[in-house]
Amino acid sequence: MLPRPPRTPYAVKDSHAVPRKWTRVGPAPADHRINLQIGLKQSHSDELERHLYEVSDPSHHRYGQHLTSAEVAAKNWIKVTLPVQAVEGLLDTTYSIYKHEEGDYTVRTSNWSLPHHLHEHIETIQPTNSFLRPAPMRSTLKPVNPIGTSYKSPKWHSFLNASNITVAQACNATAVTPLCLRTLYGTYDYTPKVPGINRIGLTDYLGESNNRSDIYLFLQVFRPEAASEAYTFTFDIIANGSAQQSPDNATQIGAGTDLEGNLDAETLIAIGYPTPLITFTTGGSPPFDHSASTTTDTNEPYLTWLNYGPRSARPPANNQHLLRRGRANHPLRLRHPRMPAIRPTRRPRHNPALCIRRLRHRPHRRLPLQRRQKHNHVPPSFPASCPYLTTVGATKNFAPEVAAFEPANNFASAGGFSNYFPRPAYQDPYVPDYIASLGSQFQGLYNASGRGYQDIAAQGFRFLTMWDGGVVVLGRVRVRRRRRGGEFG
Image (cartoon, one colour):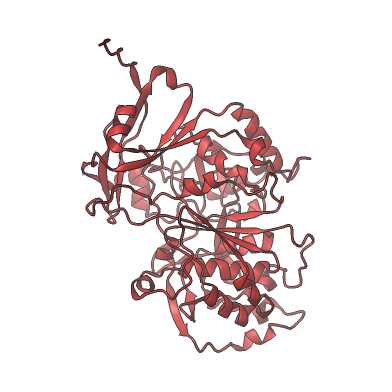
């Protein structure tokens, strides 16, 4: 037999300390299967960024001329599923099981290596040292007032078919309806200019779906002319995503399953009608349980959706795809942040500079001061801090309308500044004045030269939602993306 050739010398490609909320439990099982995503180096990335900024800048002559999938990039991601033992050999690393302080488990490593000659060709490989925690937003949606099946319309709802109604007549800060939103933002009498071309896309993850029966009941009450849309909007099922239409069982009801999905679809249709809705429901199996003979962790669906790609070579310029996920940058390793940030640009986005002067939320107010001081900074969210997306904050009340906050649970809708992306030129006329208004408050806790967010803000508190056959009022609500998406659609 011929002697085996010597192994190519390896060198560490990326390393990252395990975030403080995660604790190593033990070694990962050798047969645990990992869905690896290998990101190849993208050529002409600087040129691509130039294009992206130009089509996102209202003052540029190319504004709104969004790129197609083919124009953005070649197929520069490789997907492969391998057992831990094989991945450890390929990346010269050791995977372990880690437990989050809230009980979640994941399989990760703190560093990984590649042969020297591959460093210049591969940007990133995940999942490796990125400690992203997928979590359904329904965990933050609090039904504060279950109304039940016999919903009685309050007197301000009698203006449903009226003309020239005022915000004071249409809106109630304790129970926000589609009529209120359409009146508040001036879309009550809006007629689509290009019917049949625009669409709104909604993403569902982690077992969440959109119940047509509940949606129909909601629309019958709050947008009767749109009620038929409850049974005509499109489900696009990806990787065995959930499109369950049967009643939720007791366990699902206890977990609030479909509360978020119903909220999204009901709001989007009620605001955006007759613009058609398509829901992308992506599979996943939360939570990963290392002790239940689970050999594959499928609880990471977001890259799966991004890889899915648009249906047509050039989607309509005003397609809206509404995402509802964001995490702090510190558990998400972003040695090459532009690669994951550029991925969503294959789907057209509206300009992120809209209403930038409404960037009024105090940065990082959601974390206690002692935690900010201890860690010397507060990490911004990703992908919210990506400059190629429109990031939307929540407001509440009407006279005046203010940033949404809930003292009972310390929730507040806040903005921040990216640690990775510099401030784009279109923010220069506004952000420095905002920073100056802060004075010494929060000084040193954020990157003042980074891309600022939120970009725009909209109502996002105490929405009425039909769920499990009855109307509930949601307290801590993250629905402003849906509201804005319905308007932009």
